[in-house]
Image (tube, rainbow, N blue to C red; front, top):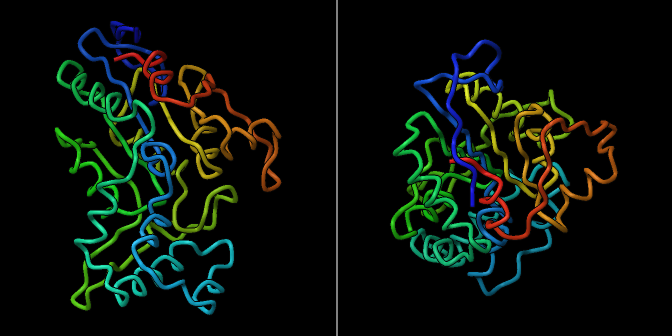
Length: 262
């Protein structure tokens, strides 16, 4: 059974505090998308709809740091090979969710009817088209309070135009197109305070937001994925990994739900 929400007192410190208000209980439920909500990489899944291999000159464009720019070119190639918006949307709608994840997200959505200040936030290196397509294809549709990700727009030429969420160089742990940690902090500043923040992820780019959490918060780390290995190593990209939040390792969403308060 998930824990019940606590009675709150008035906020007296910064937006990640555990101070509570008698009239307001607010939780932030933040999730990654690829390998967290869905059980695969949505970008690479789209490549499966085409029959011809990706040309070598296109594959060589990826240098390890420019994934968003690379995928923008891939989307053009997919469109040239017959990958229409409708075909891509059908593929994304059929992505397999991680075990128990849809039930968990529905529980969170329902809980917001009681705790109106609680928020469901998605922070992802995927894109708006993929995430919104997947969420709206559920029955009933899932509605996030905010989606922080790269912008994908339909063009007159018939392909998805991918625009990075940002161009950042301040954070060495995150890719250039999105610092999830900074994005999480900005969201909390705008929409908080929250009694508790829950962050669920799997990859290297989920380490930075995990390090922004406090002792009052919880980070859910998927077992046998990059984030778990980085935390175990304790150092990544020359940075010491210092996570103050409680760490819970998961391989299905039931583990997450049992730790959450609603």
